[in-house]
Image (cartoon, rainbow, N blue to C red; front, side):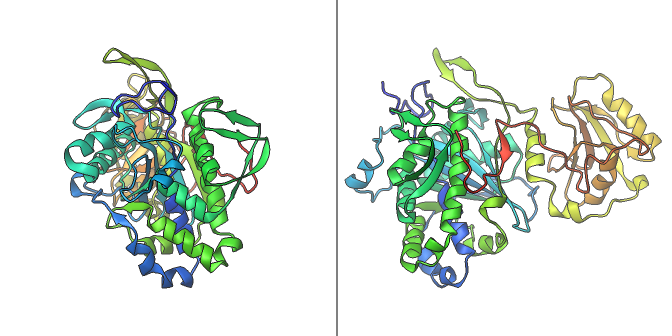
Length: 475
């Protein structure tokens, strides 16, 4: 079996993982273009008329409370579905054939947009992540869409994928965007040649990518090969996600360049390619999103991959299966550190210590840590709840429900280094101790590590958080 063939969607063996990826980048192109001004607003009706809508967001798969408030999380999905109106010539350009085995969601990323729109954070979820899919048990993350769609079509597939990612990450998914491989091709083709830079030459027969070290100019077919390569990369699929993140910033810079924005014909071609290539939930208002992202540029997009603890081969139904083992204990701290505290927390003034009730839970390794921290908090003037235990976690976290920002901010200086996180799972300010062994520190010795927001740096991820500068080269 060749590396480009695909097994049935529920179980994928080791040699069958080189699907085309990065169709999600289309939505970034949309955002970047929308914020440029009057030309796009004038053509907005034409642009939106070409977009297909899918009922991906429902009350059943959304948390009761949105922990992000006015921040937004957009799930960006790239898959291998073939649009019904695709011609044979178009499909031939993709370099792969449909095996009829279901839709494979090979690229899944969450774009986090804070309320002020000044930055954006892109979090990658490896497709081989071994996760609990509600109603189906443990499976690879990219099986969720197919499993859901078997009984309810694409909308049910999207809903199950969203529910799975929400359960895994703790994030609320506000919107859904899906792009096919043909859509990706058409967008890059309309945008024109894209320049990338490699630290070392590449000659990969599986993806067909053959490039020298240094700067290369790619057409649409070469761009597909660039974002699909995993052979020859030290970390395989995980390094390929870095390729995807890198290509995003390159494409964002190109769409914002004068060569695109000041060329009405080219700009319209790009807009038409984007609108005909994406599917979104009906509630995604691109004009409102564009207004929120008025200050965004390629230099303030931060990218990272969720924390993992390994890439083992496990046996499932008598077959060897390569999976990505998610570090669920590190996930809460990673997510909180990546997206930072909501704007309501940043703006809040700390409440008086005596008005704050804190419950301490132990998610670390030290016996009696919750009781000890509770005693210290009581001596410092806090009201306290009954100490208890929590699921194992790496990072000490202060969790609070919406409306208790001031109370959480009062506690943060007493637990230097702790992550502060808005949560729908707690009813009051809750200190969850982790294996990092942070604990309550009296103010006379407390450090200022948490800063004004109380947020510490996130735990290590599968790929370090980074911004790709203009002209940057990658492996």
